[in-house]
Structures are given as structure tokens and as C-alpha cells.
Image 1 (tube, rainbow, N blue to C red):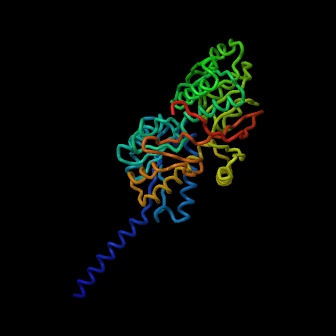
Image 2 (image 1 turned 30 degrees about the vertical axis):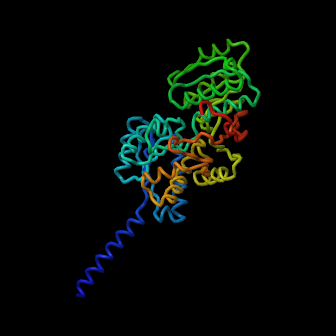
Image 3 (image 1 turned 135 degrees about the vertical axis):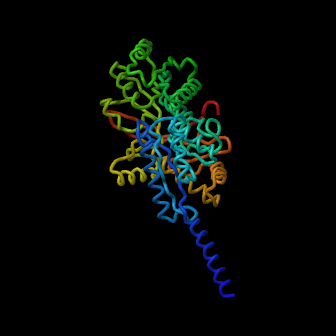
Length: 389
């Protein structure tokens, strides 16, 4: 009889030990992002911010009593490699997958995670197709939609009294096309169809935009403002050519021209404006963002490369909120809680999702300016009316 009780006690202890091990097993967040190649410059700092959030949350007891753990696989900045990287982290037990913040470069990893029934999050993919429409039901972006960026730029231009505009758009990625389309639509809504005096395109492979400049200079009168929807490294080259050609009108850009890492290539740049998630230069109008930038700078010895970094931290914040409300880290539970977010106060700004929209449209943007080679925040501006919504 004593042996039977002893065996039962040992068996019960085994069950308790297994349950305790499960409760303390890390929640694994797999980052299938670019660690090498040209996209790595965009993914690196959001990943550092995610690590900051993970460390802070773990110091506070973790999520559901379990620590968070980040693991990585390199997409090598190659679109097909995204699927391979996603499978690498999934094979290592990833509960949730973070992907590169771009519809094109993050899409393959996100689709792979969705095919396995796992939530895939792009910290800063701004094309609205990143979600239910273009990826799958488990795909979310913590970015602000490109439609919003273009709208905010158009409304800022109108508020400045600029009545005519020319749109010069790089066609390499969908983000730049979407920003430009929204800008054009909203600017014409506010100022009339004739307010858009010209539209032109170029690609990343175009080292020269001389013919585009010729067409702009031939306009009489010159446009009040020029939209340059582009990304680096082509963007700084285009800016330099425009200014060298004597075109001094204000130039507007989207988030892809955030940061100062490229600024030396356009000496003494002035009259340049762009919309960003926030200011990385210590003057963001929101105290929590300013504190994060100060903390990041103290930890890493430099400010973030771009304000996309804010989204890396916010992704981890969002996972914690959703998991604790759901009482689970299972994909369907996280998805359901994300879809209940309504102006959730995350570092990057108020965050909202629903069953059909897995990206943010109404979040305000910071308008940044460059004058005499120096960055400063101009204002925090929310969109008034996004075309088509």
C-alpha cells in the first residue's frame, strides 16, 4: 500500500513539474528580418527597440508569467529568402513571427507564417495591402498606412498655402507609389485637378533624373511644391540633382527619407519636409517618445536611424497587451484581441485594428523639416480626410 502511495506521489510530482515547466517556457518571438544586405539598415533599429521592450517586460515578470525570447533568421534582403527565414524561426518554436517592415520584402515571410496559422507582424510595413487583403488573416502591421502619409503631406502643403504641385515618384517599391497616389488625390481634392501640374516616375536604377528636371524647369510658372516619393539610396541622389539644377521650391517626402544618415550627400539641404512616425532628434512633441529616444541613445550610443524604430518597441507592447487580455499566446486568441484594439496607446501612437483592417489609418504623423542641414520637428498632424476612406 505504501508503495502505491509513493508511486502516485511521484507521478503527481511529475505532472506538477511538467505543468510548471510549461508555465515558465519562454514565449518565442521569431524575427525573420534582414540582418545583411541593404534592407538591414531599415530592420536593425526596430529590432533593437524590440529587444529593449522584451528586456523591460521580462524584468517586470514577463507575459502570462512567462519570459519573452527573441530569435532571429536572416532574409539577406532577398524577397524569396523571407520564406526560408520564416520557416527557420517557426521550426525553432516561434509563437509569433516579426517580418521586415515592407509589403514586398516582408510579404514572403508573413505569408509563410500565415500558412502555418501563426500571427505575422510587420513593424513598419505601410502599404495597406499588408494584412487581410494582401497577406492573410494573421498578418498585421503596426505602421501607419502609406495612404495616411500621402494625405498628411498634401494637407500640410495646402495649409502652408502651396496651391500647385508636381509629383515625382520612384516606382521600385509599392510604398512610394501609394504615398504618391494618396498625395495626388488629396491635393487635387483640396486645390482642384489643375493644381497637380505634372507627374513623373523614375526607378532605383536611374542614376540621373536630368530629363525629369528638364520637364519641371520648363513649367511656367514653377510649381509651389514638389513631392519626391522615394527611398534611399536613390532619394538623396535625386535631391542633390534637383537642388544643383537650381530648383529651390519646397520638397516633400514620405518616411523613407527619415533620418540623417544620408544627409552629408546633400550638403546644406534646406526647404525639405517629410512625414515620420516621430522625431529621432530629441524634439518630438510627445514626452514618451522623447524619453524612448533618450533611452535608446544612452543604450546604443546614437539616436535611432529612423523613427520606424518606434514600431519595433510597439510590436512587443502590443503582443503583451493582447496576450494578457486573451490569457493566451495562441494565434487565434492574439488575432481576436488585436482586432479589438481601438486607439490603443502604444509608443508609436494610438493603434487600431478591426477584422478587415490590420493597419492604422488615423494615427497622426510628425512633420519634420530640414533647414540648413539641420532637422527639427514642425508639428504633429492627424489626417483630416483620407481619399477613398
